[in-house]
Amino acid sequence: MPPYDCMFLFKPHIAKEAILDLVVRVGKHVSGRNGVVTDVKNLGTIQLGYGVKKLDGRYYQGTLMQMSMMATPEINKEMHYLNKEDRLLRWLLVKQRNTKFGLDVLEDEGRLELSNFSQMSKLDEEDEEDEDEIDDDEEYQLEEEETK
Image (cartoon, rainbow, N blue to C red; front, side, top):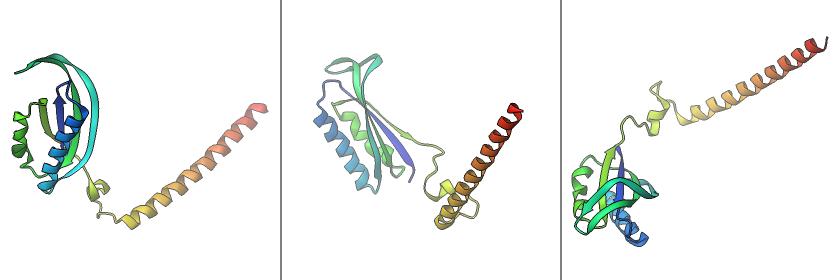
């Protein structure tokens, strides 16, 4: 399942409970379609560059929320019920491209197993300790030459 970000721009006078109600409803919709909500962020009140006209007036600011999820590609067509939601000024669903997750992060070099990965990190730590000892010796030698 590909990862998606869904941005919601709410009207500024909407209560936090109503905002959370809509976000939970969308989250339940995603999980009902075998998706997973991975993160929800409140980005606060923002000033808009232009007014968004709705039936009840024109809005120059709004509350912005971001929901990250992993869902099936059909989720875009299924979320068009948000167009009728009167608490929203705008909403946008964006598919994240070139995102690596799971074992893809470990590259294609034989699909390193996690047990080998932990051994590799131990080797890296030992190399760093050896480099620190070499650096200390070089500093000491420089100080001796300056005093002579």
